[in-house]
Length: 384
Image (tube, rainbow, N blue to C red; front, side):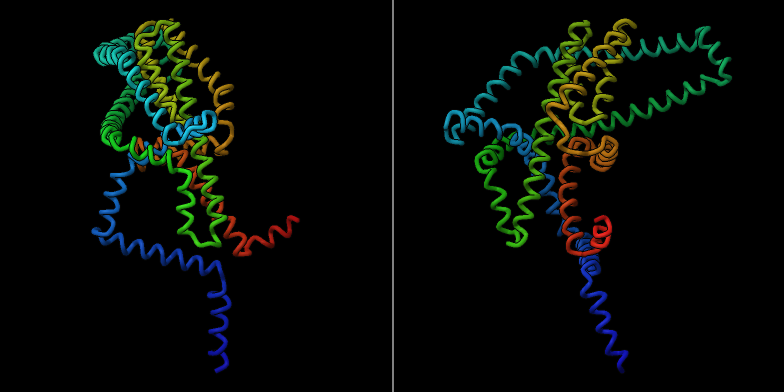
């Protein structure tokens, strides 16, 4: 009889009063609840459609907010004007810049892009012809005999890999075109959302904190502040760095006389938004154009590209980006690959800022868990 009375006390001591076990039970119940509701499509389908509809306008508005909010603050402080008037003046300036670009840059860009598309079959034939001449040369045969391997098999494997890569690239381009179509449709609503974000964005954290328990409000405010700092510094810095890379490459391509310099520079600037992997993708079309033009042009293009990468790595990025994210390069590469596999082009673009936000959230959750659970107290006492 006494044993039966002891068991409830032990169960309460080791399970109900154990914060670690209670946390695991809460997580388990949450997971089971999500699993049950996911089996009922009419509950999650409207939520999915809603998120898919508002995601692009909110994303564009958020990026534009982080870029334009410092300018609105500066205009308000420097000229002592109301925030609404500063936003309207900024909108008018942006409209003028866009009009200027449409009038001056778009015709040149369209001509170069159509020329590049028309010449691409010729470039492909020239590259194939030069490769066939190389494989049939006497030097190629001597190399094949010296290393004792059949290089034609290696060549066929490389060709098969290249074909597969191009097919995957075309599939990716198709999904990218679909994403661009959604973005174009979202552009109509973005200016309106952006206007209210610029006007009332600073009140948003206080509004969100009203739904948070009072005891958790200071910690939540700290988390939101760190998330805002991480995302804003990354978006502003990465876009400025990408524009600098595009401008430097355009100047370099003009100096060496590379064809389609504007198209290639804009492509490099767009892909530079993706850290580490972007430059490797952007150099491919420039390499093809330079290779077809002449070996000397290929050498000059590589010199220009190397110089721009050195300037960007040694001077531009350290000054603009700094070490705000504190994420290891290998981690960034794995995050980009995983996000691209899961969410496509949009995942590649949002991989790094999304990881930075999740890192802030989980860091604070772990700190709270370490403090509340007491599981790390012994380790900290031993260190002292």
